[in-house]
Length: 234
Image (cartoon, rainbow, N blue to C red; front, top):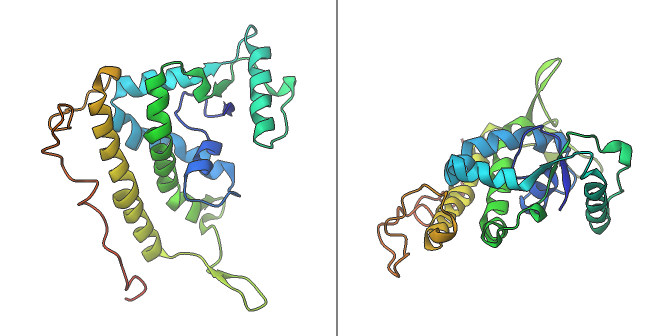
């Protein structure tokens, strides 16, 4: 998936990749996602991977447009766009110095395995969680305003926007039931394949690398939210 990275720094994920893997509607303002990518990656992913590993991965997944590679990148972007049903971009749209993000740039098969099994989904979930509050309460020229009115709809149908209680519940659920388990499971998998990830700096004791799984912290099955039946009660 070749996409222009408009953040002017290397990152793991693009808005289209977030939409593909996060539990969201398909029709979302790209800026709602874009402006949460750096925060999500620095808060969650760089720490989960270790800085050197994270920096190595993003340096491989992002390529700067130069005079020499521009034509090749433009062709690859437009083939990718065509496959995804998007309109092609023009030569004038692709400027020298722009950053192109694509997993296809990475040649290491174990980096690709990590991306496809864990990292893509995990990063998308982290961006989605980080976007919860900014997409709910916007900073506008008139101050802080809810993104949607409390109730919308017509002809007997109504849709209510979430309140503070629902937002807090979703944040807690996203962290404890989705992000934490994925981070823990990714850690175990990397440790079991540690020889392929020399830049991973986390302690791998009891990871099952020698065929025995022990002393695991239990995030993936213990630290999770309870099923809540009285969420709307005061």
